Structures are given as structure tokens and as C-alpha cells.
Amino acid sequence: MTLQPTIEEFMALQQALQTSLSQREKLSSELRFVSTERDLLKERLDKMLRKFFAAKSEARGTEQKDMFFNEAEALAAVAQATSALEDGATGDDSDAAAVDVPAHKRLKRGRKPLDADLPRHVVRHELPESERVCPHDGATLKEIGVEASEQLDIIPQQVRVIRHERVKYACPCCDGALRLASKPAQIIPKGLFSESALAWITTSKFDDGLPLYRQSALLARMTGADLSKNTMAASIVRVGIGVQPVINLMRDHLLDSPITFGDETTVQVLKEAGRSAQSKSYMWAQMTNASGSSGTGPPIRLFSYAPSRSGATAQTLYAGMSRGSVLMSDGYEVYAQVALTHDLVHLGCWAHCRRYVVEALDALPKSARTPDKPAAQFLALIARLYAVESHAHDNNLSAAERLRYRQQHSVAVLGHIQTLLLAHLHSVVPGSALGKALHYMSAQWPKLSRYVEDGSYPIDNNAAENSIRPFVIGRRNWLFSDTVAGANASANLYSLLQTCKANGINSYRYLSALLVALPLAQTADDYEALLPWNIALTSE
Image (cartoon, helix red, strand yellow):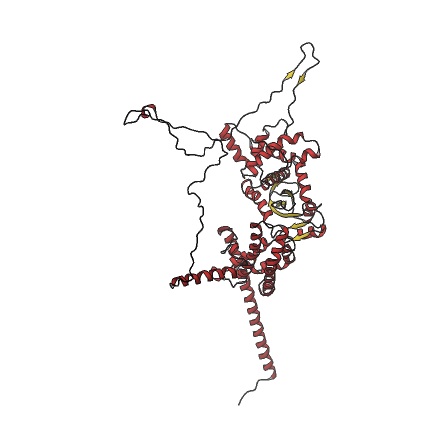
């Protein structure tokens, strides 16, 4: 006899089956979540390991010049050359033609000659009188020439003391005409260091990244005197504050520029009211066009200290920019608010976008980094955008010519990138390296694609990052600023020295001349004449 389950038993079995399926689905969902979380954590770990141990360059395999729009022409040329070689190999010389190889110059091997402008100290090596006799006939040997070789000689910096003597005058007949000769005004009245010494200390720290305690040890070795690093630090702060009028004029010129680049980096200030010594502060960088071409004026590099990275700080720094001017920045949202407030043309940075894509490609195992991977495809397309820029730069194209060239080549590549972006945007985990890269690209797309609308627009913010790099390198040595005044002084001095570098001006000579002339300036024209691109430098 077959036992038939009751309705209650059937319902209980069905309930148990549903519960089992539900638990299975739940476990499967949890497994997918844990697997995804594991992959993301492994990706983050690999990224940190690459940050510490891997190469820092973003360059990849093929050079930009090989990723250009002449693939068809290049392949055709290779095919023709191969065909010609094969015809020659068969012995068919009926159509063969002689090929003239043009003459060319080859660089001379060996060391490069030393700079002809360097001063020469000639040391003559002569035979003694006893050896200037011919062994055959006893005649005295005559000089017929010299065999010359050169070595680079380095003489340590000359350190001296300038003694200022102010002559006193008096009337020999009475006490009513006592006079004292005046001394020229100085950037630091009664200061220990001369203008040249202040310029040397400043450029050594901010150009060469040499901390003051090392400079103090170096000067002690050279002079035998113990010069306190605290005295040097106080002098630099006073110099940094004293050059503020020149910095203000540089800011006026920067805000009048049609294109401004912006970026920021961290800095630590130990003694700041209401904040702990471990608090993170910021050094903001602003700059004008790197080359200063197309009527944009001389290139300017401007640094400003601020305790925060807030929108209010950015609004203050960019207040005064002309409506319709161009702001190039990374994807930090504060810059978008600045552009909206001041009605600026906001450009996105393709270098930042490329960096995210490189990280996504590096997150893959080496064996999986094949050309068909989305990250590799995006990287190849971005390389083609940069190939267009490289061609325009190498051929010194004008803004109008660059615009036409971009319209002919870059617009099509942007279309390919956008199509690929839409195809993969929602098929990747948002928290993964590739997901972050694609969502960044998607959010920034209107700003990233805008640069092709004008030939004067830059493709990336690399110029601003390059101007920040000396500060970052110096920060590894001196680590922090002691006070807010020191941070502001550092910002001013970095601004002057980096602007000198951008204009091809010797920063030490400029600072030496500036510190001598600055105390004598009275009017706006006087200060205008002290800007790096205006000041008259001596040949010393």
C-alpha cells in the first residue's frame, strides 16, 4: 500500500525546500560578495606594493610616435620595401635601380667638450732645460706647438665678511655739525647675512632641497664658524615676507592670463593656532601657460599656503579671474565650483585620466595584460590623443593650425573612447581599479573632450604638476614648516624661484639683484621693474 503524504506534510516539505533554496541563494550571494570584496582588497594591496616597489613611470611599451594615424601608410611602406627585397632576391634586376645613400654627419665619439664660456686656467708642462737637446746632433729643441687636454676644476664657494664702516664727520670748531654717512637700505636691517648670502641660502633650500641644518654644517666646514640654523630660518622668513609686493604683482598678472592651471599638495605646519601638529595643510599651486606663447605673457608659477583644501580657499585664490578665462585642473570638485562661480571654461586633465587607466592595467596579472583588455584599449586610444599633441608641438603649430589638426585626428579618437566607455561603464565593479577609471572618465567627460574646441587649450594639467614637483622633493628633506609665517614665506620664495626657472632666469642671480633693489622700491612701477622677467641682472 502506497502512503500518500497529507496536505500538511506536503506543505511542510515545500516550505523546507523553499527555505533550502533561499539559504542556497543567500549563501551564493554572500559568496559572490566575499569574492568581490577579496578581489578588491587584493587589488588595493597590489597597488600599495607597486607604489612602494614598482617603477613610477606611466610610460607603456609603444612610444607615442608609433601610436599615430599613419598605420596604413607605414604598413604600406613596409610592404613595398619587402616586395622590392623579394624581387631582388629572385635575381630579377630588369627594373632594379641604384639607390643613392646621402652623406651624413656622425657625432664625434668621446666626452663632450667643456663649456667654452667657463674661465680657463692654463697650466704649462715644459721639458727641463737638460732635456731640450737633440740626442743626434746636440741642437737645442724648439717649441713647435702644444698638446692640450682639459679637466673640470671646482673651487668651493668663496666666503667672506663684508665690513660696513659708516664714516663720522664733525666740525673742528664746534659740536653742531656731527654727521654720519648713511648706509643703503637692506632687506633685513642689521641682518647677519648679505643679500648674496640670503640668495644662496634660499636657492640652496628651495631649488636644491638642502635643509638648513645641512647648510649650517656645510658653512661650518667652509668657514669654521657655527652659524645657527635658527638664525638662517628666521632670515628666510623675513625675506619671504619682504618679497610680498612682488608676489602681489605676479598674482595680478596670473589672474589676467587667459589660461590658468591649478593643483594642490599637502604640507605640515607644526605651530598653528587651534590645530594639532599632525594636521594636514595644503600648498596650492597656480600657473599660467607653460611656454608663455600665443600672447599669454611670461609663464608664472604661484604658490599659496592654506590650512584647508576647502572651496572657500579656492574661491579666494581664484577671485578676480576674467569671465570666459580657462581653468585647467584635475577632477577635484572644488575647481568645478570655482569655474561655475566665475563663469570659466573648465578643462579636464587627460593625464589624470590616463593614470587611473594605467593603475587598472597594472592591477591585472602580467599574463592577462593583452591588447584586447579594456584598460589596454583605453590606454592605446589615449596614446593616440597624445601623439596628435606631440606632432603639433614638434612642428610648432600655431593655435589655429593645432585646432584644425585636432579636429582632423583627435575628434575621431574621442568618439572611439566614448563608445568604448559606454560599452564597459556598467559592466565593471565600481570599486575596482577599472571601475574607478571609467567612472572618473565618465564624470569628467565634458571637461576632457572640451580641449579640442580651441587650439590654445592644453590637453592636461602636467605643467602644474611639474611646477609642484620641486616642492614635493624639497618636502622630503625638510619635512615640515614650523610656523604659518614660515609656510607663507616658503610659498612666496617657491613662487619666485619656480617662475625664474620657467622663464629661463638664473634664480640665484635674480634673488641677489631683487634683495638689493627691493628696499629702494617706492612706486608700483618700481615694483613692476623687479618682476623676474623685467629685472636687470648683472653678469656676475
